[in-house]
Amino acid sequence: MSANVRSRGFALAAATAGFGLLASPLALTSGAQAGDESAQRASTSTAAAKSPAAKPGRWRAKLDLYAINDFHGQLEKVPSTSSSGRVSTTKRDVDAGGAEYLSTHLKQWRDDSRARGAKPITVAAGDLIGATPLLSAAFHDEPTIQTMNKIGLKISSVGNHEFDEGKKELLRMQRGGCLDDGADGANNQNSCPDAKRPFGGAKFDYLAANVKRTANNKTLLPPYTVRKVDGERVAFVGMTLQNTPNIVTKSGVAGLRFTDEVKTVDRLIPKIRAKGIDAVVVLLHEGLAPEDITDINACENGAGPGLDIAKALHPEVDLVISGHTHQPYTCTVRDPNGRKRMITSAYSVGRVVTEINLQIKRRNGEIVRKAVKARNHIVKNSDGTEADAAITALINRYKTLVEPIANEVLGHITPLASGPDEVTRDVDLNGRDSPLGNLIADAQVADPSTVKDGEAPVVALMNPGGIRANLVEDENNDVDYGAAFSVQPFNNFVVSMDLTGQQILDVLNEQWNGMNESSDPTSYKVLQVSGLKYTWDLSDAAGTGNAIAGDVLIDANGDGTVAVDEVLDPGVTYRIVVNSFLSDGGDGFSTLADGDDKLVGGLDIDSLADYLGANDPYTPTATDRISSQP
Image (cartoon, rainbow, N blue to C red; front, side):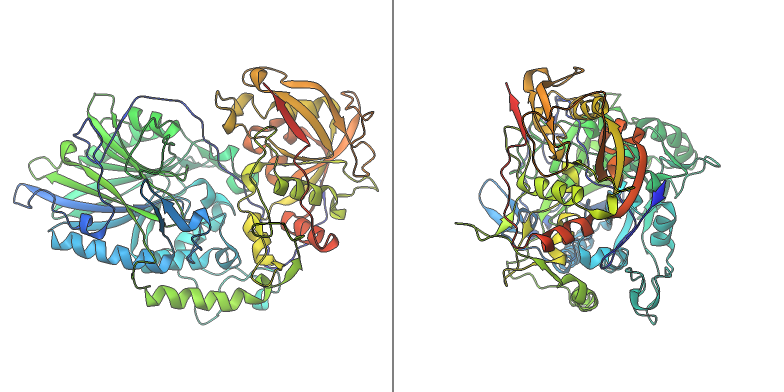
C-alpha cells in the first residue's frame, strides 16, 4: 500500500469512529432499589445524596460508589443550547456538566458519604478518553487523565475509545511518560508541552479483564482490583465490549483479542473466591437504551446487549456499572439464579453521576442485594455550584496552549433565514442522509491526496457515527478549526480504493444486514454519500440480501453530478474513498476491507478544512441523495 500523508494542526494517530447499539427488548424492572419490583423515583439533588441508608453497625460495612462513564475528555462546560450541556427531565432542562463542577459535586457527595459512616469510591465504566474535544485531543488526552486524577477517580474499566491510539498509548495513559512530538509540537502533536511538567499517567487503576495479548494470552491490564471497605474486601472487575475490534481501527487493536464478557467473568470468579472475596462489582463498557430518558432513574422498556450481559453474568456478581450507549438508567434484572441485581449508567460527558449505596455483611463478606440502592445525580453548573479552582487552572492552561490552532478560521456558512448558521448532522427521516454528511463526503471525494496515478475517486462513503457534532459558526460568524475538529475528532486518514459495482452494492446492503441487521430502522448505519443516488426499501431491509429499490446512480465521470443515464454497473470497477476506519471494515462494512489498490491520503479533518476554504461561504446541500420507500 502506498501512502501520501499530510497533516494540519494537532493531528492525532488514526482512530475509530462511532459506536453501535443492538436492540433486543427484554423485560426488566426499573427503579432505585434492587429489592423493589416497582420503580422508585429518587431525587437528583444533593439533599437526596444525604438521605440515610441503613444505620451503620457492627454487622455491616457500608460502601458508596460514585460512577461516571463515557466522559470523552469533555473538560469544559458545554453551553446548555447544546444537548451535551444539559439534562432534559420530565419537569425541565437542567444545565449540566463541566469537569470543574463535576469535581466540586463529587467532593461534596463523598463528604456526605463519610458523614453517613460509609466509604466512598469514585469509579468509571470506560471511554474517559478518545473522541475528545481539541482541548484534550491535541495533547494525546493527557489533560483528561490529569483531570481524572484531580477529581479523585480510583478505578475504571477500559472502553473501546481507550484503544483509539493503540495498546502502547493506552499503557502510557496508565503508566505515564512523554511522546517525542518534536519541539513545541513541531510534528503537529504536543505531548508534555511543558518539559517541567512531565505526564505522570493515571493515578487510578485501568482494568481490562477481557483484553488479552495474542502473543502470550495475558491481559493487557489487570483484570480486577480489590479495595478494602471497613475491613471487608470488594473486587472490581473491568471490561470493554467484546465487539471492540469491529468499532476501532485495526491499528488500535493490533496484537490484541477481546473475549466474551460473560465467559471472562465466569473464569475470574473462582480466582476471586479463592482469595476469600465474596463481593464483586463489574465495570462494563457496554450498555442499553431505555425508551424514555427524561427520567434518569428509570429503565422503561430498556433494550441492548448490556442488558443481556447483566442477566447472564455469574451469580456472584452483585452489581454492574455500565456505559457505551451514552444513556442514563438504573435498572434491576435477574441473575442466572433468579436473584435481583442492578445495572446502572450515568449518561455521558460528565453530566450525571450515579450514586450506589452498598452494604456488606461482616459475617460472610457478601453484599446485601436487597439493600442496594442507586440514584443518578445531575452535575448542575448554574445553580450556584462553585467551580473547582484546580480544575479551572488546568483547563485554562491547556486553552492557552491550544488557542493558536483552535482559532484558525477555515471558512463561513451561508447565512440562513432563521436559526444559527450551521450545517447539521440531523438526518432526513426519509433516506437518512444529512447536510453535514453530504459536506463531509463531498470533501473527501474532492481531496487531492486520494488521487492515485491520475485517477480520482468518484464516490465517497462516510459512517454516520463518525460525525460527532453540528458544524457551527462562532460568535464572529467564522467556522474555525476547533469547530471542525468537534465534528470529526478521530483523525482517521482518507483512503481511496477500487471496488466493483457489485462490491458497492454489497456495501450498501451491509447497512442493514450482517452485523447491522436490526428490526429497528432508526438503528441502521446508513452511510453518507457523495457521487451516489439511490432508494432503499424499508420493508425489505433487515435480513435480506438486497434492499435496493431500482437502479443505483453513480457519478462515473466524477464531475459532481449524477445523471439519469449513469447507472451503476456491477461489472465495472470504480474508484471510491472512505476513512481509514471504514477501510478496515469498521461498523460491519467488511466488503470495504477487500478493496483493491488502496492509497492512504491525508487526514479526514484536513479534507473538511480544505473543502471549507475552497467553498467559502459554504451552502448546505439538499438531502436528496438517499431516499426510502415503505
